[in-house]
Length: 177
Image (cartoon, rainbow, N blue to C red; front, side, top):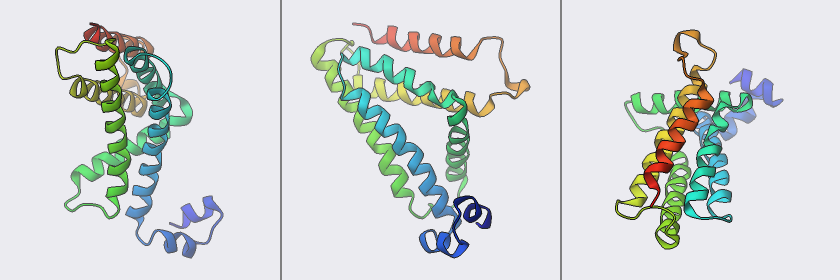
């Protein structure tokens, strides 16, 4: 906590006043990262275009985990989610993280409803579940590749950008009417 206080140019007592437990600080940081994703999703989903167009832009936005300045956030979220999964009891303030994550799910449902209305995606399957699954898989793939970026043992023979394009095209082709 002292390192955090030093980095923030605050006293450690100030940090503990707002975050009495280290886990609360970690949850707050993870929630902040997800909230930034919510803002990106919201801008795209509530912007111009068809459902199909917006979905393509969402996939492109999820590649942001690969950007150098976002790789630390990707690593933190990946570690945070593993920690939560292995915790024996729920983390204090975890509702804040879940609430932000739920906003992404709601935005994807909003996008699916647009797809039903504008006809830009197929409607013979459950569009809400399909879009949520695709966003989840694409986002997890992006976080995982960002986390392993630069570690030679985990590099594949396929360029990461090409892998993203392949996955994006598979998903978009599946949704074409």
